[in-house]
Image 1 (cartoon, rainbow, N blue to C red):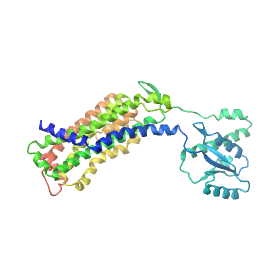
Image 2: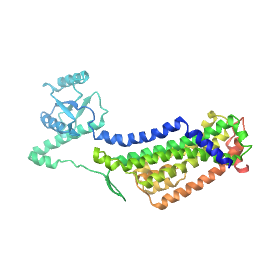
Image 3: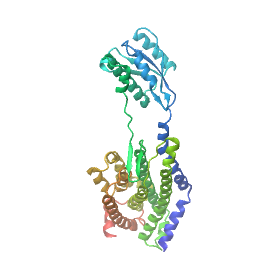
Length: 417
């Protein structure tokens, strides 16, 4: 039972640390902020209304455009306040409006060139042109005004024009076995958040194993430990101990997300904010894929730690270990865009990418059960193989000092240890 003492020491040493407590408690707060925050902001007014002047070089569109801008509202509040523009030649008025923008009297001005009706062109001049949502709203208002003016020129009455130009209000409804629920992009955001959590925690706890091995090796503590317990049991105890810490953290996060999903319907009814639904199976697989990723990459991190003599030496070897995780994150747009495609299926079945990409598919659209089971089985087989190889590297490497071994020497440790 000596290996259990290693597990207990690794667990208690880390779970009692201030960093663990802060990270475990801060994680749910960040998840709540990133999940609820954007939805709340989208239902609220985006700052003060923009003060906009309209300079119409066509001589026909100013009234229609001003009216269309005044009608644009968010949460019942007007988004644009149309300010009067001076009369005169376009060049003179543009100079005056530019001065007004620079002085802060208006936020910007809209210039409708002489060919605005025929060419459907317009210009917005302002200090801030990064507020893309407001500018998109402004562009649609101008487009509606131009199209409406053309229709009125064709003899259609104003009431008929309004009816023809009524915009579509498209609602997205997520269909699941538990029912249907409106989704305003929360599911997409949730998938990204969970993917990021998996990536960072797998890398973080794997790195914790490596740093622990390097610390024990450089302080020569490991020489005392291997005198009473075999290196393979020592490695197993370290992986299980650190993994238990990560599991504790993930169980706290999963419990929080379960509560968040449970109260989502009530919060939506009270505040109008649609929170994403998190099925229980997704939470279970969230923990499962973390464990798979941790034990796969943790073994490789431990092998790196046993092969080097310092943190500086580890940096050059840890990048190849981290590369599959980075590639998985880079591939997430492909998988999330079409979770059920053949390419997404193949990518998610690669053991090094399974913890991230298969879970990404699970959080978006639940794949067939056989694919999930197959991905877990393939990853478990890879974990067994890499833990066997890492144990052999660990057995030799933790007692070697001095020159860093070459790749050929490390492979020899695996085949002859």
